[in-house]
Image (tube, rainbow, N blue to C red; front, top):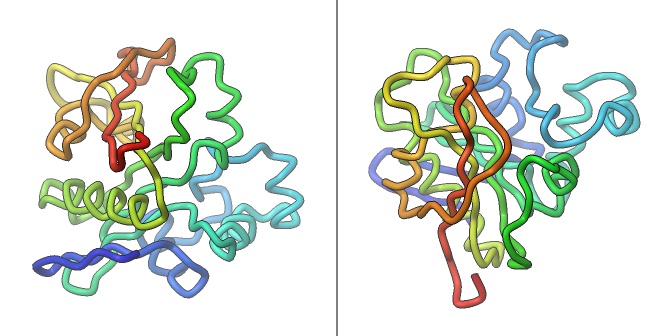
Length: 199
């Protein structure tokens, strides 16, 4: 369930790869910095899983059978993080009144993309999305969705985690709907890539 190609490797973030994930998303290990949990689980569950520590809560998620995402390496260096898992395992998304389901296909969802500082604009995102799709396909996902924006130019870096229409189109996704959500004051789309006949 890992993907390897020409210097790029993408692997599920299991407990033994947690530090590599942290090197991408929170290299200083600041407790108050993002651990990619706010869009995934409520504060109550963070307390239950991590005893108040967001880092420990994310470590707990990485010990589950389905990893909360994948980390991409370039020549052995962790350079990217993609939060991807079954939509049903992302309660805030599943309950969202702004990003609603368009059908009953048991899609997997990409909710966050992060490229490590110093490695941006070097093709990491394309390799990361490709690796995330390979992981989802290996786990039996019928389709993967993302909810990016379609900016005219460069977007606010604080909202770049949602991705852009262009990057997902390069990976074979198509626009299948719209949402009532916005990022950087731009509407977020529903884009999907079918992986199996069930999708």
